[in-house]
Image (cartoon, rainbow, N blue to C red; front, side, top):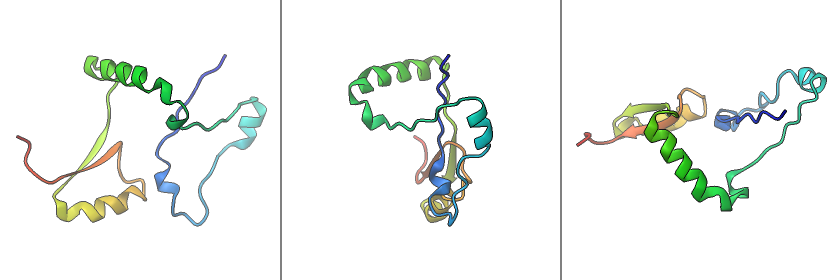
Length: 100
């Protein structure tokens, strides 16, 4: 059986002198796991159907998204820097005005 697993959040690794990299490589080898990278840009023909599916799943509540919200444009630089430390959960957003 194939069980795909998406791995996200690698921005916290960008500026490390020694990136954390894969852990438990022996377990990967012993279990005959195949690790293969992919990018959404490799599958442009699937985009319309994927967006339609995701919209439906979000509207139904079957899929939710997490986000970290920082208040005020004056806090935007700190929010940006915290991305590289992995301090956020989900999308990092900076609210610059009141919700109307």
